[in-house]
Image (cartoon, rainbow, N blue to C red; front, top):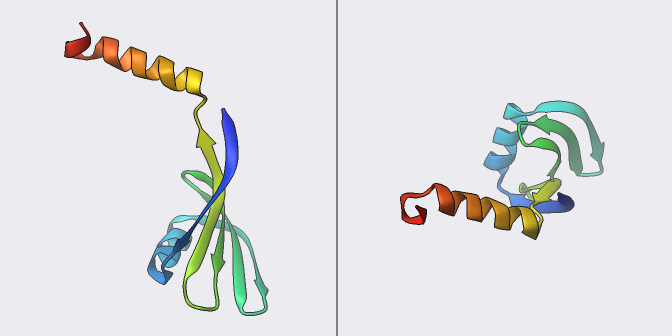
Length: 84
């Protein structure tokens, strides 16, 4: 499985929800920006509270290799009533 860095801009409310549901390992203020290293159900994330009120959520995205994805689709097709 390949892993790559993924990020998305989120609203202030989404940032607050993420921080409430995650365990914050450490935090640091850098100027007007606050950084939070979090452990969440989906893994580790870095949440950034931006000065404009929005947030940025960064984490490692998992991508399934094409071979595994093809096997998964074939197994699902064989298990479905139309595939029998």
